[in-house]
Length: 366
Image (cartoon, rainbow, N blue to C red; front, top):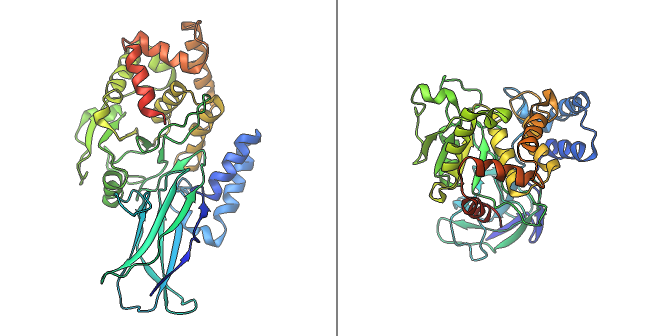
């Protein structure tokens, strides 16, 4: 007999790690002092249970994993865990399920554990354990809290997250599972600081169902970066400038080429990235979130979360690049009522039609 132990039926979980929560708390309270935050992160990773983060340059961008546990009265039988968004357990598994391993017994039978990550936020999930010979446990439901952020775990990666999940000022949520932002899939220079492993690329293709890699790197034009297995993901190079650069003539032409990819819905789900998923990626992410009606504070938060990655600190106000970008847009389009209209006005100036923008918004919003 299989007995489910954890999570309990109807339990609520969160995808956010303690580091995410601390960063968001400080951002929301307006007390995001860099020195104090760095000190709190240092204290966090110094705790023995968080030693997993002490690697490379302390990557704190991974979501919290849920450690499912169950017991089986016949330890010889092979167990398998299934997690579905559907109560009848149908459909493909869209989460990342780790290795099943035995743990110390609790009560009757042998106890097993398995880490599961990459849940969508604000969703019900259902889980069940089955055996090789057809035995099945009960089906339990769990609810994933509607956190403002959906971080993603990909083996070898850093700074990967769903662009979906954010709430707009009109009360609509950006649809999850269509646009992902992150680090490069493979380095053009062969660096291994944050390249996805084959396991990470497989999860990107199979579990997140990504069809297109939108590569924003200028350096990708100089050679073929596809050295490993990409599991059917198509690679499109469309270099992008950052912030004020996308308002200049050449930069605007590059932005238009990027939106030509985004306006073709056959390309989705899309994973877009530069080198570290910080600046060129951050520019496109902010442009899209503003266009969809996400608040100024939340766009700043999305940009700043990169601080938890293998990059150095990212602050919206640092150097004034991002505020100058918005100021130039206001000068150029004085009739725009808000950030969404600023972004739309610039896209219209590039020759993108208003109806195309409307369809893109409808596609990307729940």
